[in-house]
Image (cartoon, rainbow, N blue to C red; front, top):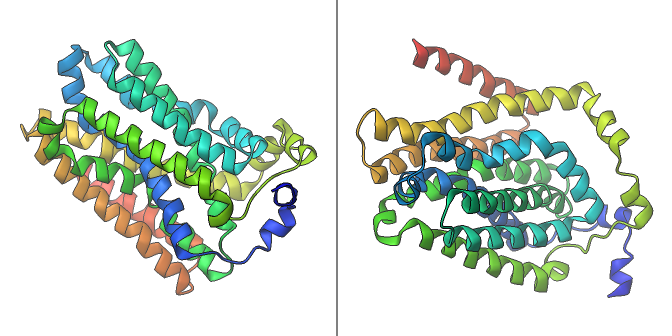
Length: 310
């Protein structure tokens, strides 16, 4: 065990690709973390009725994840690098489990907000560690393909929760929270027991961890390619969150569509988005450049946004 713990990052980088099952499980873990975003979206009408919340508080509960990302996303990435990928993965899942348990028994908005913050912290622990763990599994063209598949984790996770909407009247939002807690605990147990056997054991020595600093973050932000990628992702996030957050509310409030039907329709939109992510993996494997895929997506967003507003 100690010998494995002293494995260098260089050795990790050269580690051979592992099983497809390990890759699928890592992607599923990220999708599950993203499902915590969609869970609040589709349950909010029931939560508002249960706790008598206004739209302002409801919006805050839904937007917790985005707010945490805006305020501390860069710092969270540095923190994950410091504490290690595996600790971040298991710790993130544990926080998601704790947040779901607390949320399922919440009697007021304050308690539910604390629970959502816990879930948000756990979300970042998972989704910031999984890509690097995936990269350690892959090499060559397979890496671009799988990372393109991974990029669908957010719409896929939200979509899964939106598709549950028709079952909410029977299940209840509190039971949905508890079900998510059980799944999170199951994933914690699995990764705790199998992380060394499923993925390479990654440990960064103390000197390497201490090198992650504010200067490192500034250096990354100073690179033009990093900024371009960040702005492209910002544009994508605006689109995906407008579809996932606003569309269900628009359908129920303006068009008097039932919550279950609104969830299915909104989930169908996100299913198309998920398919687009997966298609990009095949395009990259076929030799299309990453910037071409990104440009096509952004141009499509722009044209369709103009058409909708018109």
